[in-house]
Image (cartoon, rainbow, N blue to C red; front, side):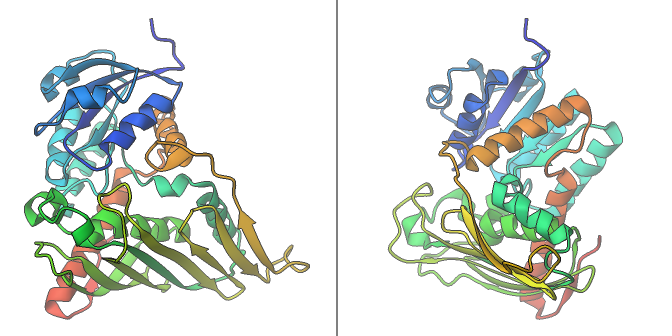
Length: 358
């Protein structure tokens, strides 16, 4: 008998760069007692099962997995074009799902799932684990607490290793299977974070995208996006597969990432090389004696997706599903990110600013 404080999780995966990390996340959570695997599109179930001592069953049939009566939730890490099919099946079974971002190749497909999930009161969330990092929680608290005053502008950079260090034939570079390129693979994290930190959606997008790597791919590998938030805050999102001198593959990729927020009373500057520090200047009350501060964090090592923060994110999702509390990154947030990405792609084609409906 599984006690009420533990969870039994179904893990659905297809060949995906993050799937091994997600199974490690579940393996590292003491509250997760059992994991039941479902592999799609030729997923190597034996190899996946070896990554966790908690695996109790394996199947290539989604129907068989969903037939298990004692599952508490699903964690889904599949190819973008497959995700909504899995979410639809989970909805029919009434199972909560935490799914790999972006969640679909088209915003309309994920929006349909979100509407159905709301109607049937089935919790669904996206794996935007960066929200739960300790430094990001402090940034969010500082912004909401008025530490920056009125925010005027934000900026984001998410640049990683060039296509040549990866596999140009990988599904991530296929329009059919991925939907889009660097925007839905990496920039999506910063788009979500900026909306989360400001507590408001993006309503207007102007962008230029391109495929500038020598290797031929079907999706954008470079994106320069300008956005306007609902309150009038302006922002930029720069993303690309641009860095030379990187290790091969996805796990060893190099990164040049940055988040910046500029307000009337202060600013936050966050280089993302190690995710363990940021600089904040504030003229708000309580900062008079030390306006400029460097905040440092001791981040424990973890094999989980998103590290220790990723473990907490998944656990908080599972607990929220059981208690009915707010989940960390609801499906509606993922829909909005896809809306912004599609607006950016449309803007690049038309040369016009695109409005985003919220």
